[in-house]
Length: 122
Image (tube, rainbow, N blue to C red; front, top):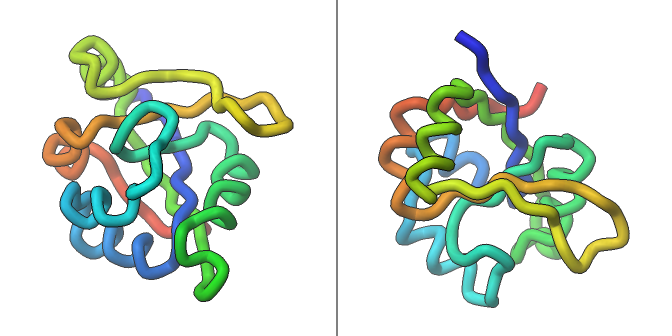
């Protein structure tokens, strides 16, 4: 099975919560209080350096450590999310570099928790 590797930068506490409990829409909505580019959801990068950049901007990054988690997702499942409009591939705007992101809507979280493999980076 062909998989894609995605990266999500966040604070250490949020990373541990995702790794131990999966994605949680209630917790995410409490953290994403400022407008975000594609709406509330999980933002991932294809490039590890991009994920590290955004990890450093996590809401609690100034007062705690931040990290990146690795997400392996079967390509067929990514296509499923894209077809259902529960995921979107888009350029990242308002940064000085060119990169793409893959955004997953909150509606995708339950199924993502079943089909994706969330791992600590390393």
